[in-house]
Length: 560
Image (cartoon, rainbow, N blue to C red; front, side, top):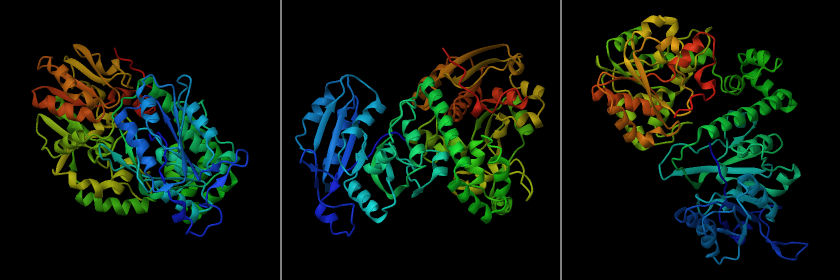
């Protein structure tokens, strides 16, 4: 999730005034009430206990902007440390206006206070640990000149200190883009103050961990939003764990915001007109339109993904036929289970592992170059009787008239980028961890894998993993090793050491995201049998129609 603000030191007015435009970069005006010059841009930055090595570069990146007609308003939100105040006060630049909350009031209060203090025609946000590139404000203001109908502008970011391929959003942002997720890199945002005030847009304290997303979900309904297709900010991504309660709250608020957007989509006449234009171009989409919009069903992803990012079966079939010719052999779930019964370990790859392997991050695991390298190395290992490397196959090639499975779309669209990682001609089947396995393999056969074994479950503390007695009532004993639900790989050595304290006849059942893939591999090489089978117990309940899919299951396991 992108969180933060954006601003940059603004370029000199003299330079920008060479561009002919009636309203954007005119010389400094006077405040009618106070007779003081009014800056073109108000750069706003909340600060709370930011470390000196982060705060100084952030401040200086604004002061060193090529565009200089700005005020730099900083609010210290009741930091418990003295350093932030001392650092801010050490700068004698008159453009800095420093304020301090009497106590820690939180980010939403502080942002709204910053907005109330701003006097500039434009407002640019800045996070206290990011770095604005020198031409950021200049570039964004020029974009406003060339696009007078745009009210809010973000930009691409360069992620550091760990490089990531993320941070490049599309240029023109609409309601559907916000529905799919965060369409803006929040620390890069600049907006026209008058447009925001016209619609009385503020941050809402009812969304304490999703205030940015809520703000964009309301703004996009009334204002035009865009992204400069250029990196204008260095976004500092730090490997901080998210607490279980915070993750649950984020998930709940995210769904609430999407629900509101869906209501807007189904009611707003302008959006329905846009939908009809799309349907005329692709009659296949008409099916979804008829089924979803009139009945107001709340399947956000069907509306947001299938309706508007949908490839027809004919298009997908053509791409998949090409992929099929190059794709490695994937053994069946039954063949995979039989190997596990014989004592093999399994390292499993899904879309999350592929994302991390290619340098990206996912909800419960930030980008990590060490983890990415390990995942790529393991994927290149030849499977043996003692170690299975498993990937997701097609399940079955679709025909023109069959439903489109997620993995059909995934491989059709992603194979070209991923195929270089596949060094082997055959792999075992990752679907042994999904509900579909129970349709092809009898549950009693699956239960043979751990029958009469001493099992240690390695699971995320507070994760969705549940101990399903109908699967595990035949084990001899069980124990748990709890790991962090987010970024478990940060403590990998500690986890591996804890596992190695058990005897070699112990069976490990691991549910820990991409970390589980690496852990299963290392435990297998130490002489253990280790199963990277994720939320298989949850999937059994899903198979029995007693629970939703694991992705839609609330956090239940509080750990110890």
